[in-house]
Structures are given as C-alpha cells and as structure tokens.
Image 1 (cartoon, rainbow, N blue to C red):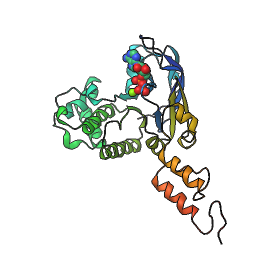
Image 2: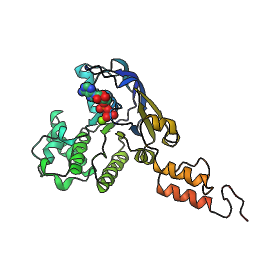
Image 3: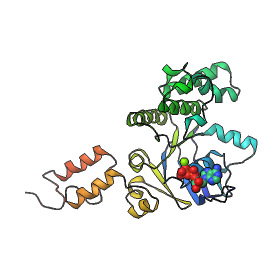
Length: 288
Ligand SMILES: Nc1ncnc2c1ncn2[C@@H]1O[C@H](COP(=O)(O)OP(=O)(O)O)[C@@H](O)[C@H]1O
Ligand SMILES: [Mg+2]
C-alpha cells in the first residue's frame, strides 16, 4: 500500500436545491495521519467527505492526491476509489449481499481480482475488524455496531491508503465505540490514513493528530489541543468544549494544575494533577 496525501483546496459545493454547505474549504490529509472533521449536524461534514471521495464534484476548487488534481473521468475516478474509500454513516446504505463474507468480497470481486487474492483480502479485512466469527451470518441479523464494522471491512478489502469514515461512532453504545476504536487502531498500525467525521470533540481531542472544524462553509484545521481550546470557534461551530479541556481550565483556575494545560484524556488530566501537587512544583503557590 502506498501512502498518499489528499487535500481539498478552496472547495465550494452547492446542491441542486440551492443549499451551499461548502463555500471555501481547504483541508490537508497527511499520509498515515488521523484527521477528525468536527461540526454540528448539517454543517457539511458528509458533503466534504463525499468531495474527498470523489463522489461529488466541487463547483469551485479542487481535490488533490499527492499534488495531482483529481480527474473526474472514469479512469481518474476508478483510480481514486482504489486509493480512497468512503464508508457511509448508515451501514444499511452500504451492505446488500446475503452474508458478511460476500459483502466484504464485493469490492475485490468487482475489481476483477483472482480468487486467491480475493480470499486473502477478505480474510485480512475481516481479521482487522475482528469479524471473522460473523463470516457466514446474514448481514441483516447483525447488530448495528457489527454492521458498521462489516461496512468498514468491505472498504478495507479494497486496500485503500485513505479511509474516510462518516460518523463511525454515531449510534453505537459505549462498548461499541470502544470496539470501533480498537479496530481503527489496528487499521492505523496497518498504515491506513483515517479521516472521520464526528461532533464528539472529546473523542477528536483524544484520537486525532489534526482536526478540521467545519463551520459556515469553511474549515479551520489545526492541532486538536490548540483549536479545541478556542472557545469562540467551538461555540460558533455549535460544538461543546471537550471535557478534558473544560476540566483542565477549572483545575487551573483553582491553582491545582498549570494554566494552559491541554490534557487529551483522563490519564493526562491525572498526570497534570500529580505534577501540580508535587512538592517541587505546585502551581499558583509556593510550597515548602
Ligand atoms: N442531497 C442533498 N440535497 C440537498 N441538500 C443536501 C443534500 N445533502 C445534504 N444537504 C444539505 O447540505 C447541508 C450539509 O449537509 P451534510 O453535509 O449532510 O452535513 P453533516 O454531515 O455535517 O450533517 C445541510 O444543510 C443539508 O440539509
Ligand atoms: Mg453527516
């Protein structure tokens, strides 16, 4: 698998109804990175993922893969879809075969690959998503979380270098979210770049290398710790500040941790508290 950089440059998109969710959007997806697109319902996350996947063509601006502009002819799109796979939010929009193994095999079969190669890809994809035990089950009998993982396995069987996941955690219970992220970690170790959309800022803060906040037709992209600490941006995007940063601000105001600390998760909050209460350094007061 090669590793590709994908970007959208000054992209605009208007639906035939006249709704223009994207006015001037630029995002950079570095090879092997974890990117979270954050935004309220209706902000344009799905539209942007479809643009990056090549299934919608921007009215202005362009999508680039390794600095080459995406060509929207058959050949260009076919090559793009082999490199960049989109998994839709609702797995039922993506699964239609009689059982799991046929669904996962659908893409490789369509590529016209040989039987041995199809077997290898399907087995690898099912192992990555930990769904081997579901191979012969009818997809309609599976839980929502299982169906989501089958849909991702189908995309992974195409061996993309970039996987675009629309709201992978939406509708999952806490254990389902954990299983999903366990699976994503395996994909990343496998070298796959993962871009996901969500409105869960705490999840983005903990998971992503880079976040893109989608708001009024544009995207602000940057380091999760810096961008998600910008309260005005978070509020304008109709999002909630991630709880670790809210908690850190509250602990800093009572001098229990350093001002400006940006812990990403519960472990890092605890580390900040330990540092703040050590006899050597105690923030806001001298300790003898
Ligand atoms: N097929 C469509 N036709 C017309 N308008 C659409 C279509 N899909 C989405 N929209 C509109 O575009 C805007 C952005 O939608 P979407 O990209 O789905 O946002 P998000 O994924 O962030 O919820 C919304 O106002 C939505 O109603
Ligand atoms: Mg959406």
